Length: 78
Image (tube, rainbow, N blue to C red):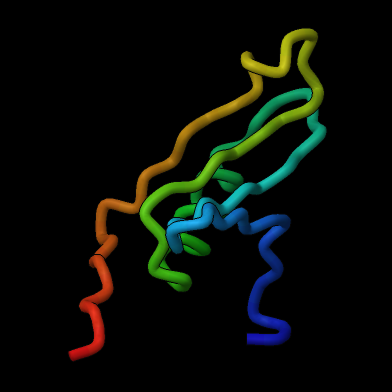
């Protein structure tokens, strides 16, 4: 999907697990940002994403974990 969406960052561990990162630098988080990351998680069939807002004194205060409740693990090839 070239123009449908642009994920900021997808991080993969060595075992095939992936996490979507959506990066922001805003004074206040809008609900549309959570809706955006949930849509990306569903399109990509990823289980988890992090919404990170860099406009905080402490970075840990700007991180929200978002779960894809519709995530379905991929079946291994037979």
